[in-house]
Amino acid sequence: MILLWPWAKLEQRAVCAERCTYGSGRRSALALLTPLHLAEEFGYLAVILDAFSRKVVGWALDAHLRAELAISALVMAITARQPKRGGLIHHSDRGVQYACSEYTEILAAHDIQPSMSRVGNPYDNAKAESFMKTLKQEEINGCNYRNLNQARSAIGVFIETIYNRQRLHSALDYRSPDEYEATLAVRSGCEHLEAAN
Image (cartoon, rainbow, N blue to C red; front, top):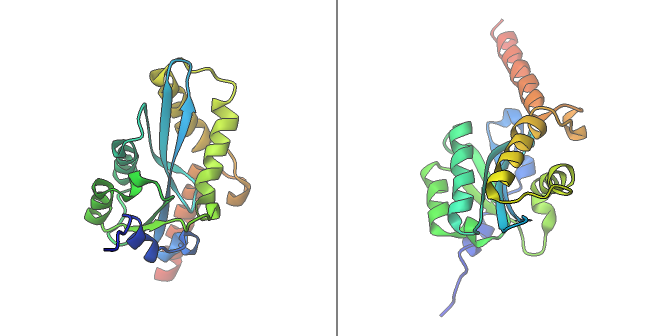
């Protein structure tokens, strides 16, 4: 009898999120979980980023690593972005939270193609890892969050106000994720107008 881990078939269909561009009609999302040490307890943060703009489009923080944590971030991202059917690739590491049936059923229900990192290749999810490094350096390190509620509030402000709206990225022509998306949306609108003339 051959036993296949849940992610085995996902790895066979793995695709490179870098190949998806803004105008291609195909987008990609990157997912990652990280632990947080709080004064009174441990917390775990799940995030989902738009791979093209690096914007955090879904996140959740809780005291457990169960699939519900990753699912909460996924549902937030789907609600915020409303991806077109068949137009999104979801890339994650090989965590069991992303390979479990509950998570993959949500992806399938929205016609989102799953993709998982290759064994021993951290570069596949480098943009998500980079976000976590930034979050820890610029917000978490040096802060002594007492509990999950305090951490959730502060991290939420960092993600929604500072990272998505204000933090400049060299890869985005020194724009914030929100500004970068707005610039491309205007450009895309202009291209459609020029094509109509």
